[in-house]
Amino acid sequence: MREVIREQKPQRGVPFLYRTRLGGLCLKLVSARWVSRLAGKYLDSRFSRHKIKKFIRKNGIGMDDYLPETYKSFNAFFTRKIRPELRPFDGDPAALCSPCDGAVTAFPVTREGTFAVKGFSYTVASLLGSEELALKYCGGLCVIVRLTVKDYHRYHYIDGGTAGEKKFIRGKLHTVQPAALEKRRVFTENCREYTVMHTQNFGDVIQVEVGAMFVGRIVNAEKESFSRGEEKGYFEFGGSTVILLFERGRVALDGEFFANTQEGAETKVKCGEKIGRADGAPYAEKTT
Image (cartoon, rainbow, N blue to C red; front, side):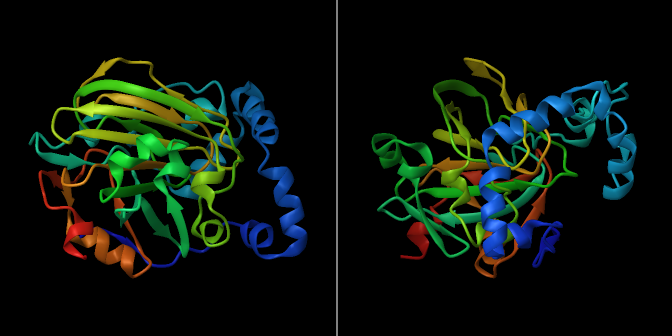
C-alpha cells in the first residue's frame, strides 16, 4: 500500500501569509519573482553551504541514497542526483510512471476543459495560456505531483518521444503547500513552463513545471528527442510541482489516486513508480 497524506501541518509562516490580513500584505512581497531571484543568488553561493547539514538533519534525508559529491553551494546540494538503481522506471512500455518523487492528486478534466483543486476551479486554457492547445485535453486527465523540500528534486521523461511546443509563463511564486492551494489559484498564478511531449505510448502529453516560493529556477534540458526515464530537468530550492495533462482515452490511473484525492488526501510516489497504464478508459467518462 502506498503512503497516504491526509493532513499536513503547514510550514511555519504559511498560515500567517495566507490566512491573515497583515500576512496578505507581506505575501505580495515574498511571492514576487525578484525576491526569489535574490534568494537564488545567495543559495548559489558558497556562503550558503553552512545550511546543508542542518537541512539534512531537520528533514531526515538519507544521503546514502545519493551519488557522492562535494557540494559548492546549498543549491548544488538541493539538486543532488540520486543513485539510478533507486529510481528505476517500470520496464513495461504501457506502464505509466511518475516523472518525479512527490505527493499525487488526480482530477478528471471536464469536456469544457475544467478541473477543481481544493475548491478552486481551474481551466486548462488558463494553465497553458492557450485556448487552442487546451481543446485537445478536454475530457482528459490532470495528474499533479507536489514535491516537498526533502524530495529528490529532479524530474524525468515518462516515455520516449519528441518535444513539441515549449513555453515559459511569467507569474508570481506562491508556495504549493495545501494551505496556499485553499486560498489562491496557485497553479495559474505562479511562474511555470510547459512542454508538449509527443510520446510513443501515451499520445501528446503536456508536462508543466510550476515554480514555487523561493525556487530560484526551473531548469529544463533542451532536447528535441528523449528516452523513457531520461532526466528532463530539475527545480532549485523550494517545494515545487509537476503537472501532467493527458488527452481523453489515452491513459487510466490506478484507482487509489482518484479515491484518495476525492477524500482530500495525497498519495506518495517515487520517480519511476508505475501509477497507471496506457489505453485505459478515461476516468472522466466513467463518472459521467
